[in-house]
Image (cartoon, rainbow, N blue to C red):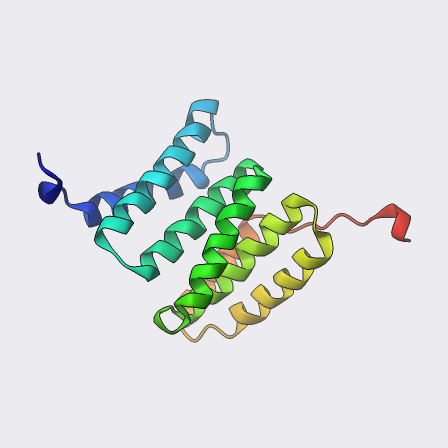
Length: 160
């Protein structure tokens, strides 16, 4: 099979669906956690072959989401920054929910990285952008994804 015989879009969609099935699973094995990382990266690679900036932004977001779920702060922040950069550079090509998701991921990655104040600011922006999503179904999906992982900033006991 040559490179041109590969249906990158179909593979990207299939891999994306696999990631979500793993993300929604309550008790993942160590092998499934590893699989999440590999599949997320593979999905993005196939989107890079078949899509454009929109698919790249969403693929970076999904990789970041995987790392957030796994608690890998450095990788989550790296992919959140990539998502945010792509969102800013291709703003006019993206949907309103893409902007909300970029802030949501950045908030979670910053929180994992210990940058509490910036995380809370980004979280508030994500919630505000989410409330402004035009499509009712898109807004509902975003709200569900927002609440799927609790955002629990830890209070600094020394600051009280």
